[in-house]
Image (cartoon, rainbow, N blue to C red; front, side, top):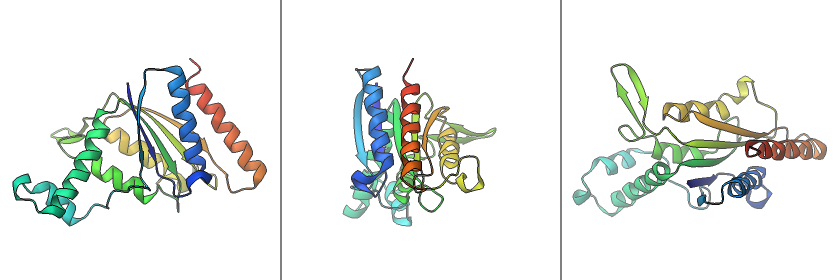
Length: 201
């Protein structure tokens, strides 16, 4: 099984989502030793945000692209191929200003591709990337689960993944990390318990 692990936090080693994402991957490898892990740090090597130039590059025949267009097209195809090849994903998703990091959104814009990961039909949209299992590692300084303030965070990721045909989605949550040392410790302990439960079977 191929597992794609994405980190998106800008906080480096101080990041809770990075620590918990690594714990998910370690638990997954312990439960399924045959797992092949590929790793992408979206802050160390971020994708450019979607632009008119991005669309022009992918819409231009390869033989007619200039160097900049070829680089853009390569970035898009690399992200898409890695996503399609993965049987499972671990997505580190801290909350920044009530939503996901812009680096994660830039990656999403490279893998949400009509005709590749979804299509529109007479009966509406159809996801083409089903059959994958996804674990979202969601962290936040405040508490947002079930609140309007969480709509552009975990709820958005679930919506997007579902649009692509992915229904096996689990969430490891650590909230209230900015509410003081005791709250942070309790949140991280709770998240580790959630990770243990994911692979206890």
